[in-house]
Length: 169
Image (cartoon, rainbow, N blue to C red; front, side, top):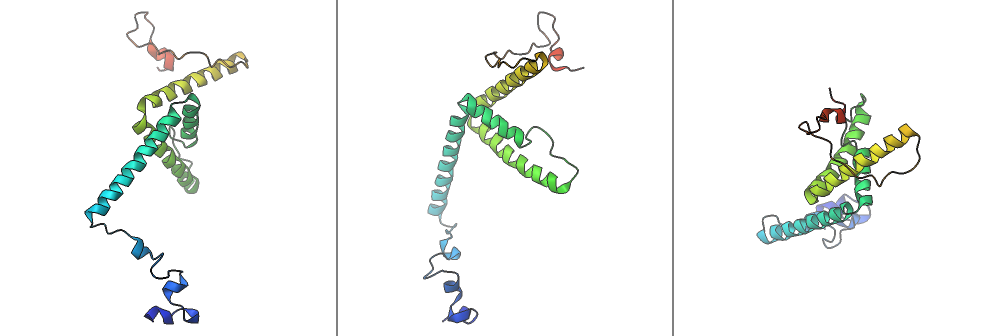
């Protein structure tokens, strides 16, 4: 009987009290020996495999227009492109937690498929432009077939100033 047996009711020792019989479930016995190079190699391989699977899932999601729209919606909900400051510490902390999740998702997208990120932003801008146009004209039709066009640059041969596209200056 160990010294712990006297601390728990009914003569049950700590291991029995916590349901650890013969070392099963004991967190100290379940930990890997991190000084063993074989264990380190096995854990590194498992982590790399998990990361590759995560990137494949992200690529699959971003390969579809609906998937890119879903990711964009969540990045927006998570305040990735705006400040989380509210003036209240608790709601600010909550918003920063949401933003942290959004930034992790953004990081996954940028690592797995940066070209699809650009496509996602272009599609979101086109959708926003169409929504604004529909609101301005009172139209309820969906002009989602409109193609994205690159904004003109300052050195446009037509003499068009690109800053007009962004309402700058």
